[in-house]
Amino acid sequence: MKVARFHAPGDIRLEEVPEPVARPGEVKIRVRNCSTCGTDVKIYRFGHHHIRPPRVMGHEIAGEIVELGEGVTGWSPGDRVQVIAAIPCGRCEECRRGHLTVCPNQESMGYHYDGGFAQYMVVPAKVLAVDGLNRIPDGVGFAEASLAEPLACVLNGQELARVGEGDDVVVVGSGPIGCLHVRLARSRGAARVFLADLNAERLTMAADLVRPDAAICSGETDLVDEVLKLTGGRGADVVITAAASGAAQRQALQMAARQGRISFFGGLPKDDPIIACDSNLVHYRELTIVGANGSSPAHNARALRLIADGAVPVADLITHRLGLDEVMDAIDVVARGAAIKVTIEP
Ligand SMILES: [Zn+2]
Ligand SMILES: [Zn+2]
Image: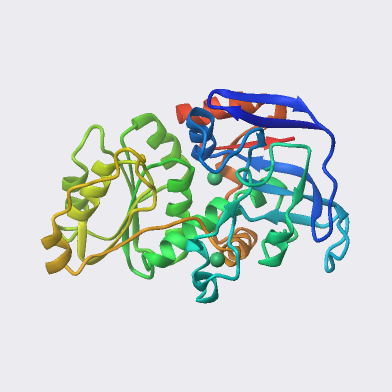
């Protein structure tokens, strides 16, 4: 079978390898869609300390079961499934407390295990043990189902930031994650959702699809001023930074309303993670700053439901469908920000 494997930074190879076999407790799937995201670009450029090469990349996975390992029950060949990306251990103190997204023993598809840029893939027993294999609801295609994983992460972020009825929400960063944030905030009853990006072209492309109440090009106007203007000086109830930008995080504090919530959804570069924070803004305005680290298996199941119910449509966000041999083109398109969502169909 064909796979796309990471060997070293700058070195991803399309290779022919034997099909994997489902061992006891595992499930083998025919991958139908594996979507790409900014993380794949990061891995391509810098590698990752959890990846021991060669490793099949790809973590936004949907496919069809072709073989069950010994002892697997409740599934049959032909079942359409979506696979979680982050695998909590299910046994540690955090997992027992229900904090599955911050399990210190977390492993990931495409990092510790071969991922979905392949024609066939084995779902590890650990994924099944934490209910990480989800049945794709009728009416949801494989490509849409592959977006359940990023949507699950967005759902985790908005739960932590308590996005709800009547909120004015600012989303900074108009990539696929920003688009999902806009759509999910609307489905959770936000009053108005504003979308901002430094890059005018990318912002226009995203705004045409997700129709925010205002699209703010922060490369051309002062984002904080603009948000204060739009909210009558009050600021936004929730500010979500879906960009690896310390400047955006600092601005988020300045444009949050009293009792506002700020989600540092996107992490900062490892070598530059320190920002200046006016702690008195947090104190007097009773701000809440939250992080976000992936998603739990339950978030993935609920994300699939949101897609199936039409609460968060995702089909139109998939702007590019490419074959496995075009995986380098896919990574290039994502790196240039020239697409919303690029999916690989191996
Ligand atoms: Zn991803
Ligand atoms: Zn754990």
